[in-house]
Length: 145
Image (cartoon, rainbow, N blue to C red; front, side, top):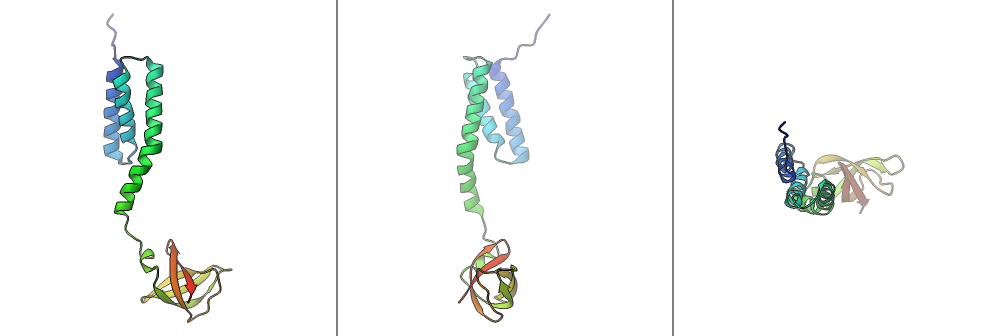
């Protein structure tokens, strides 16, 4: 009877190709590291048994996902990140249109003709002038001038 013999390096190369295809389809920047780990494992597959191969694959995958991926993502995201509408207002002045009460968490500010939800550490009365110090999503964090 003829038995199908799959060489370990052929298995890992096939696995790497499948991971590369998944990366192209999903684009999560994760499967590329599965691909790298499978290729490295294919390079050592002819010299070691399955246990060592799985160890090489696992260690390579963990190291690349844990150490390399975050660095690439932070570099890519920092280069492509656009400031939000709220972040653009940091440092600008505004006028309180509804009392900002930190106990209730309510308040509104008009900045450059636009009405924004606002919060502050202190109570700020209507018509007070504030400076925008930051944002929490679409809520401006303000301080009385």
